[in-house]
Structure formats: C-alpha cells, structure tokens
Length: 427
Image 1 (cartoon, rainbow, N blue to C red):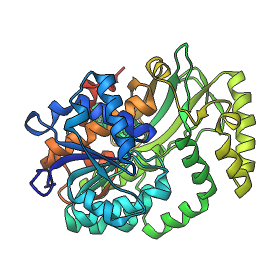
Image 2: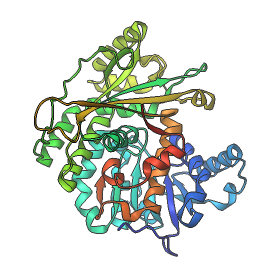
Image 3: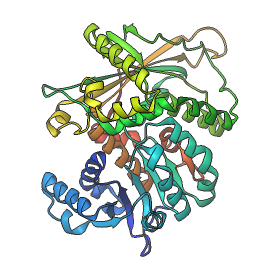
Image 4: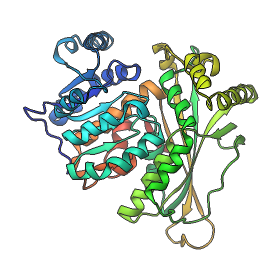
C-alpha cells in the first residue's frame, strides 16, 4: 500500500514544484481551495521553485483571488532547481507527493522523477508528451516499484478525461465493451481563448523527435494487444464527423498513447478485455480548416529545422493564428471557455459471444468541464493527489510508473471529479 502519512521529517502531504509557472499558479489556487479534503480534513502543503520572491508573489496573488490572507504566512516556500539535484532531493524528502508543474517535461521532467523515486515521494505530473511519459515508464518503473513510489503521469486535461472516460464508459456498459472513439470539442466565450506557449513548445519538440518515440517503444518489446470484436476503423486526416456535426482531425495529444498503456496494464494485471481506442478533435467549419491547413503546412516545414523551430518558439501567436500565446489566456477568457469529450462505445451484450459476429450494442458517454488547460487541469491534478492520500488501499498493490487509468481504476476519482465540475455522464 502506498505510504501517505506525513511525519516530522516529511511534513508536507503536497509540494507544488514549479508553483510560480503559468499553470503552477492555478494549481496553487486549487490546492488552497481543497485543503479540507486532505486526510482527516487537513492538508499540509508547500510551494517550491527556483525563486523565493516569485513563489511569495504567487501566494500573495492566490491570497487575494481566494480572499484567504492566511496563505501569505501559513504556506511554506521551498527553493529547488532542476539544475541542482541536491535541492530536488531535499524537496522530495519533505513531501508525500510532489505535484510537478515544470515543463516542457522532456527538458525538465526526469531529474524530478529521479529525485522523487530515490527519496520516497510519489510524483504526479500534467505532461502531454508521450516520449517523456513512456521513457519514465521504461527507466523508472522497476526502481519505483522497489521503493513503493507511485509515478503517475498525464494527470491533467492530458489525459484524465480520455483515460478515465474510457474506463467510465466500460463500467457503464452492460456487457463487453470492445471499442471507443472520442471527439473533443472546445468552446470559447465572447472574450475568445488561447493556450500558453509552454504547450506549443512541447508540441514543437514532440514532432521534431517523433522518430525517437518509435525507437523507445521498440525497447518495451510489447506483444500486440489481443483484438476483441470488430477492428476499429481508422478515420482520415480530415473528415466531417456526424457525431459532433463539424470537421474533425485525429487528436494530436497524449490521449491515444495513455489509453493504450492503461488497456495493456488492465489486460496484463487484471485479465480485462482490452478496449480499442480512437481519438479525434473537432476543428469547426471550412474557415477554421483553411487556417488549420495553412498553419499546419508552415508548422510541418519549420519544425524539421533548428532555425524553423526557433522561429516557431519566438512567434507562437503568428504561427498559430493566435491559438497559442506567450501571455496565456486571461482569467476572463478562462471563465468563458469549456470542453466536451463525447465518447462513442460499442461492444457485446452479456448474452452475445464477443468472439463471434459484429458488436450488437452501443453506448455514448460525455465528459465535460471548464476551461481545459488552467481550470480543468489543476482540478484533475489535485483530485488525483487527494485520491492517493485518501485511498491508498485502492491503488495498485505495488509502486511503479502508471497512467491515471492504471493507478485509479479502483478508486473514487471519477466521483471526486464530478463534485468539482468535471462531469462524467451517460447520454
């Protein structure tokens, strides 16, 4: 069972590392909102990062936003730097769980995972970079298991709605679920919306290093997952989706990789029937498509060369038609934005043999919530951490590097998310 108690030498349930970053500041606010949900109604926490002044400023800001003046004096500040392993070790020794908000993870993630594993702290991140996530599984899973440490990646919008959404769909289906397709749509309010350019940078380096991901995957030596039911057909690179009544493209994030890893775990550890998965995102009408194709062509060309990558990183607003920005969205933009994941599942009723004939039953579920990047992501991350603290017996029997679905399939995480505005429902 995961160790979740604080002690005089390990005084904090949670330490938010990278608390003064763009996403980190919203994680700080979300933790401050949920302190009463900690073990025995009390959550001990601290913030960490490179600059004491910036961390104090974030606490000052959170105190003002939440009308909680006590945050200025009651939350401890830890100075730690990815480039200084001793400072990371000192931070990890004081935490039950480190919430790692420092990205792009391909550059800054591994030293934090290493320090957590070596110093007995569980690690949660909000990474959407398959190369990092799978690399950590390859390199640290055995050591984490030996130390009883849980390293759980992609606990934000990437990829809790998709991964837990597939499990929710499976649990609501009467029979054997064999395939799910998800369609993401995002709505912005009158103020519009955008994404902070940290995500843009992750995408740039992810595409540039695509070949490395393939060679990394070969090292696992995985056998193909058994296929049950009709094979899920792949959709085109651009198609009109009758499901969401707009044009759609394959979803470029970490969801397909994360869901597949969860399904592999459930097959190998629990002899579950694997669920095939396809992920798509709505892009709107013809005007949006023209912009997307133009931006996509520039992106594909420039990402191949170092000078091109530098241009993309320097001018995110220009090359993404304002979709990404160095300033990130305003609070007003966040308030007006929301996301919706429609999951369409198919499978076999209890009386039908899944190895014979075509699927004979369908299900549609919905995961919907507030603005994805900086409202839903902190909610998902913090609820994942609170689930570890409050339900250690429901986690897998041994430590290791896990996906959200693998770690939380037997917990009440979905119920917790429902109470905090990320709603899972059957339609």
